[in-house]
Every structure is written in structure tokens, then in C-alpha cells.
Image (cartoon, rainbow over all chains, first blue to last red; front, side, top):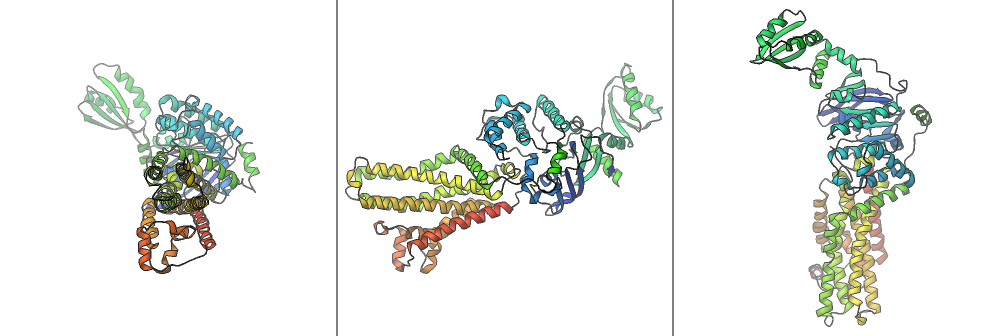
Amino acid sequence: MIQAPPTAPPDTSLVVLKTQNLSRWYGQVIGVNDLTVDVSPGVTGLLGLNGAGKSTLFKLMAGQLKPSAGVVRVCGHDLAHHRGLYRLIGFLAEPDALYESMTGREMLVYLTRLQGFTKDEANERTQRALQRTHLLEAADRRVKGYSKGMRQKIKLAQALAHDPQILFLDEPFNGMDPVSRKESMDLIKELGAEGKTVMVSSHILHEVEAMTSRILLIHRGQILADGDIGEIRDAIERHPHRIEVHCESPRALATEFIALKDVQGLRVSSEHSLLLESDLPREVYRMLPEFALRPEMGVRSWTTLDDNLKSLFEYLVEDGR
Amino acid sequence: MNTRELQQAYADKPPVTLEPSLTIGLVYNAAVKELVRRKRLVFLGMAVVFPLVLTIIWRVYGTKQISPTEFFANIGGLVYLKALVYLVSLFFGVPTIHDEVEGRTITYLFTRPLSRGAVYAGRLLAVQSISALVLTASLAVCFLLMVVGNSQAINLDFVEVYTNYFLVILLAVFCYTAIFAFMGTVFKRPLIWGILYIFAWESTVSVAPMRLQMWTLEWHLRNLIVSRQDVQASLTDFVRGLLSVEYSLPLWGSLFILLAVVTLFTFLGGLIFGRKEYVIN
């Protein structure tokens, strides 16, 4: 496991949320395995492939599942024994579940009132949450008529309407269009800047990168890396990068690259593509545009095969061995 | 208050849950609105029209052959108590908690500072109110159909029988919804268990020999009906007659047992709901 110092969230000296040796098994299947994490104010990205244990971890942290072993502490208290702590927590669960017969506003007022607010306060907070999630126009329509993106937004609105200090957002951008995605990402960054402790999960690296530099990488129920995304990227740098170049003459292009000492491997992968392996891909990326300008090479495009979460995990798993 | 101040404030004393009475009220209101908008209500509304059709038929053809008291005793005993009470209680009672679990909206309630017992009580009360409303509305219309323009129907005997059945039906709804809500909380296929309970237990055991029949709610509900002699022979009565063994219990005894059943199943349902882990995927 790679340990890197966290980046500077609003107040890192605080540990708002703590898990100690947290485990959860579903019969023979391990959901989360012996996980110890401290979470401070600011945005923390929880990254993992599908089935890595992100949702299980959120459910455990939000008290929706009982741990098979270990404990979750919110502000020093065990959530299982102090349900009042839910006043401090906002939770956006992954399932697409809403009160279909209610309007968006009715649902938010109801759920905000259940946080202990009076009717007037709940109305006011609902209005604010609808504004922040850009849902005002659809607020008085029945939820069952909402699009997937709007459904995600109303779920986000209910999580933040009561102004909680801690937010668990499980795949909040699922089904959102690019504009809504950007708006929601900005909102999450704002919440982090306000000093809230926001944990947001995703299986898309660049989504998380756009909101925070502090990440937790989870793989098969275990934290694989905890810290700054730059540190984790540096770890990846130690592994050769694979770049696929699509061109008219892969053999001619290979002749050019063969002289480069940073290129460890070359393979003509098909009639019109060349696969390169390099320890220092920056040099390769510097040269590629130059070759693209030479008509005899016929360079059409290039793709970095490793710039995805799966390969990142593969590297980190290899590192741990 | 920022995070640090909050953490200091809650270091020794974490925030408390909402008052149970407030939780019950809020959950009750939301559940009632939700139930009123369900298609289920329309279906059950159609079912409770059946006794009204029978009443119209009686008004047109049967007033001379069957007295109003006798007619109402039969309709109350055979249609309401033996069929509609089961149907309404089953279709409203089972989903009390099951709807929230199946719809996966239970997560919203479980991530609020609420006592789960209060959530259960609020939803059960809503279900009982709507079930009672559906049946009492039907009973009220039935009463009107019988008495409007039929002055001979209104006598002390009739009012006594009507009131008796009205109260027993209400009590029956409260008992059965509490049991079916409990089943909806405990079992994975509560509807099947509910149907089994009605047919394999209530309907069968209530005609069983010896004191076994006293273990059914139906027996105690019938025990509360003062004018049982007016009910026409049914299969149940026929078998009872064959076995010719009548057991008795004072009226207050049955009333106590029925109220105890409501309390016990409400308490158990709330307790299990409070402790059960729901794995929502």
C-alpha cells in the first residue's frame, strides 16, 4: 500500500470520521476487509472499480450496514449507538430510489423535517438546496417524471438540504449530462471549501481529479492507496507506459523510435498501428506531434493505453506484491 | 458552527434523536399521502363496493323477506368480517414497511436522526387509518342505502347491531393490520405468509374442535358480536354445529385479548424493524 501525505483540505488536523479495522463479509464474500481510515474536512475521492467495495464502505460509514468487525466513529462516537449523529450526515446512496408519488419539493421538505427542522425552516432549506442543485424549475413536478440526471440531483439535494458537516456521495454523477455533471462537481468543490467533510465515490479517475487531489483507492475491499493523487500518479510513472500509435507506416515509425533510449519496447500490433513501451513517455509524447507533421509517416492518432483506472489498479497491486 | 466547533460541542454529548411523537406525526402524514395516491386504494375501493351492491339488491328485492337487522348482521359477519377485513388489512398491512424496503427508500429514513420504532409506529398508524377509513366509508354508505327512504329500518335493534359490527370491524382492522405489518417486517414473502395465515389458520382453526378455535382472532371478534343469532348459516357455522361444542369467554376477555394482540404485534414489529439490517442494493 502506498502512503502519501494528504493534500491540504480546509482543516486537516481534525479527524471527523474514523474507521478502525473495519470489515464486512457477505457470507463467504468480502465486502470490506480490515480497513482503517481517517477522514478530514475537505473533499476526499473514493476511487475503485465496480465491485471494489465503495458502496459497502459508504453503507458502513453511514451506518446502513453493521460491521462484521471493527468500528466507525463520527466525531468520536459510534454511529450505531448515537442515531442523533445523523443530524451531521448527508447520504446520497447509489440505488435509484425516490418517493415517486411526491413532488421534488414535497420529498425534500419531508426529509428535511425529519432532520428536526420546523416547517418554515424546512421550506427555506429546501428552496436553497433546490437552487444549489439547479432543480428549481422541476421542483413542483412529481418525481416519477424526472429524468435520470434530475433524479440524481434531487438525491444530492436531500443529502445537503439540512446543511450536514459530513456528506457521503455514492456515484453522484451517474446518469447526469455533462452540464449537470460540471455543476454538481462545482457544488461538491464548494462544499469542500466551506469546510464540510465530503466523501465522493467514482470509478472514473478524471471525475475525482476534477474535484480533489485527495483520494482513497479501494480494491477488493482494501485501501490500496491513501493520499495525494499526484503521489499515486508518480507511482504509476515507475511503470512503463504503453502508447498505441495509429499510422500508415508503423514500420517506418518504429525505425524512428528505435533509436530513442527511453523506449523499451516496440511492436507492430497491426497493419496500421504501432505499440510502444516507455519509461519516460514525456519524450515520446514530445516527438509524436513532430512525426504527425511528416506525411510519409501518416500518423492519424495515438492512445495512451494505461491512462485508466484499471491499469492504475494493476500497477498498484503489482507494487504491493 | 464550523466542523471544529461542532466536534467540540458533541465531544461529550452527541446530538439526540427526534422526539418520537414528532417522528410519528411526520411519517404518518407522509405515509397517508403516499397511500392515498396508490393504485392499491382504487382496487380496494372497488372491493368495498361489493356489499353496497348487495344492499341495493336487498333494497330492491329483499326488504320484505329479510329484516334490516338480519340483513346487516349477515353482511357484517359474512362480507365484511370474513372477507373485506382480511383483504383490506392484508393489502395495506403487509406493505407497511415492505414498500419502503422494496422501493429502497428506507435508506432515507435510516439516515435521519429518528427512532426506528417511531418510524414503524407512524407508518402502521397511517396504514390502520386508511384501512379503517376505506371500510368505515363503505359501512357508512351501506347504512345510508339501508335507511334513506326506509323508515322501518331505523329501530333500536338495527342501530345496536350496526354499531356493534362497526366497532368490531374497526377493531378487526387494527388487529389484522398489526399482524400483517409484522409479517411484512419479518418475512421475505409476507403476502404468501399473510394468505397462509388467513386460510390455514384463521379460517381453518376457527372451526376446529375443542378450545383450539379460541386461538384465532376470528373467534374473539365473533365473541364481541352480541347478535350472533341473526347470522345465517355459513360453512363455519355448519361445521361448528356438527361438532356442537361451544366455548365461551366473557366479552371483556376477548376485547382484552384482541387489544393485547395489537399491542404485542406492534411492539414486536417495531422492535424487529429497529434491529434488523436491511441490505439495500
